[in-house]
Image (cartoon, rainbow, N blue to C red; front, top):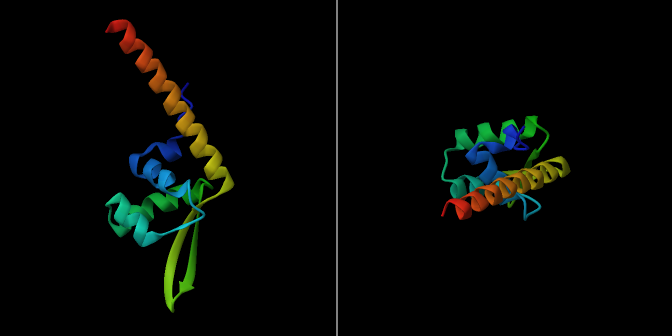
Length: 102
């Protein structure tokens, strides 16, 4: 059985977690631009990760404007690290196989 987390494995969700992992939080607009997706696509993936307990979505006021901030929860950080570790494990198996075949 794979150790890949289906809540994270969708490409946009994996990229979103990767962008959030090194920071405390990030603005929705920044993430939308970096992922090159629409508001609705980012919102859908953020809500799925929020329902899994991996992302927190906060509305704050900065410079008299409302902003939406996303951040990984502790559970989200653990799940992302485990997911990346499993991807690395699978990649090492593939690399070893290529060395034998090559």
